[in-house]
Image (cartoon, rainbow, N blue to C red; front, side):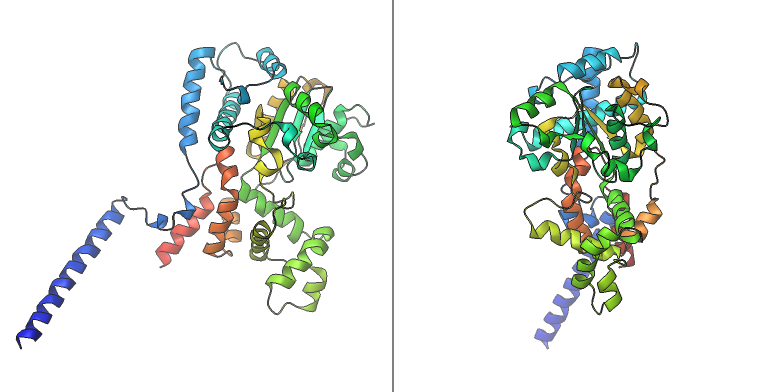
Amino acid sequence: MRRVGSVTSCAKVTLCLLNIWVLCVILVVALGHWRVFDADLSLHRFHDDSHLVVMRELKEEANLKTGGFSTNKSKSAEASPVVKKQIQEHKPAAALTAVQQEIEDRVSTMTQWCARLHPRSRDVASIPAERLSMIMVDREHRLLFCQIPGVAQNDWRRIFIYLSGKVDVTQHLKISAYDAHSKYAPLLKKLSDFKPEERKKIVEESMKVVFVRDPFERLVSTYQNKFQARYSKYFHESFGRKIIQRYRKNATAKSKKEGNDVTFNEFVRFVLDSEHETDGPLNEHWERYYKQCHPCVLHYDFVGKFETLADDTVEVLTRAKVIKKLSAPYVADTFRNSEKSLKTFFQTVSQADLKRLWNIYYPDYNLFSYSYPEVLHTLFQKSFHDY
């Protein structure tokens, strides 16, 4: 009897302690001191909002030293003499405009991240030519532009083609997207066309420009344009068929043959496996920006964004002193998915795959000043509350 009573007492004590522990956990979570959603740190460990602090410090230092323009003594991040001249010529009498300051902040963020990731700067001559094929060069106007599919690529191809002076059109947007990629494509010079030593000279002499977009939003846009769109026969035949055969159980013969009804979840799984299975680059439509544009080697002077495309385009054309050779509108109308729309797509993807997807694209979020995707935050919050 004594032994039974002892066991009962121990059980009561254990239960009491367990209740106290549960109560403490509830209080800590309620007070926000324990980030439950970080139990798997793979979602958050790679995104670092310190770039916001870096931007503020650089801005303050720049205002003290130059009256508004950010400076950087690092040789690898220093702007070329040509760019310095362009900036000085367009420097406002007073403070920078909001657009100009935002662009300077983006460049500063990119520079700081590159210093952390690649403290020993590489030379552009060391990059294989085939990895530089997305970078357009206009030697006459000393412009270098990294074109990224899904980020106003057609607009900038039209601009470069029109500036060549070899097309008979009155306005650059009158050049069709098809002609920009076929008929007039030979007019576009790429950095990969030049010899290594010549590439180095071009990079030093040119104003280097890149435009980016929220990576997850671009992924959805790519899916809509290349897989949902009925006219995209090339992607249906080249990728759609393979994706359906690989990831869809009990796929119909029609789907296997036409490849035109790939789901977003299937597309994401294909991207994830492609990244894992090959050492080479991904398809340019879903490849990471840093892999296509090499920001830590080229050290871009101008970082534009799809989210502010019109204003950023005017600013870069003004700095390059070519805006008078063109006529407005400079870019075509753009379409962006709402957060609600993005959620509709990403909620079809498993949490494990969302984590893997984040691990692929997080460097672009950091390098180009994008915040942690709201759609991921929303979906993981919802998952916890459902549980």
